[in-house]
Amino acid sequence: MARILLVEDARHSSAAVLHGLLHDAGHEVEQIADGAAALERILHAPPALTLLEVALPRIDGLRVLEAVRSLSDHPIIMLTARTREADRLRGLDLGADDYVCKPFSPREVVARVNTVLRRHAQRRHAARPSAAVAFADADGGARLEGRPLALTRRELLLLRALSGDPGRVFSRSTLLEAAFPEALEVNERAVDGHIKNLRRKLSAAAPAHDWIRSIYGVGFSFAERPA
Image 1 (tube, one colour):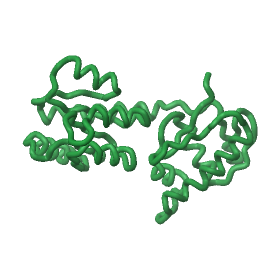
Image 2 (image 1 turned 135 degrees about the horizontal axis):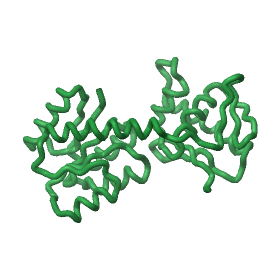
Image 3 (image 1 turned 90 degrees about the vertical axis):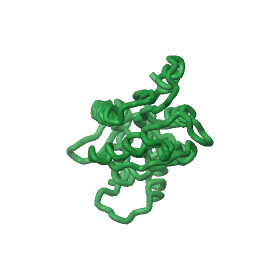
Image 4 (image 1 turned 120 degrees about the vertical axis):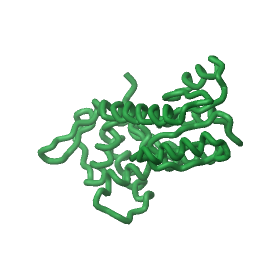
């Protein structure tokens, strides 16, 4: 089961049918009809995939797509009544994973959702870990560009998560699960202190590069040195 965000006017009959079919397919569905609210939701508590209408109040779907793509590869399928080729190409150029024009078959959209989810999972599975970081299974230690790092267990877990998929923006909640797998009640802000210490240690081992970057209001990402 995946959490799906459906961003479309609930008054549209197609939205109700699509909502029901997604639910029947085993997905958990949340519906939002406002572009600004959808952007806030995607950036701060991202679902597994977003179905995004183009014509939305406050911020239109293409602007939401552009804002999300500047920070992450979150899966997005555009839904729109705009059938012109130029409109479709713009959505795809901005990074949409798929583009469905109205009127659409809700069953076809569900099939496309499942396809994009599988493709995204495969892409994540194929993520290339950072070449700059090496982990020693024997002692649980780590090295950055060959230099040993004196890390706490939490810092090591965070580095494993971040360096395992360079460039990906990790939310605090995701990093919290990575660094505190056994904890049930830990505030997300606990991640910040450990990230601060980890960043300091990485900088001391290999200065002149910002290894961990903060994405304001969203989370953190690991950045490789430019080639």
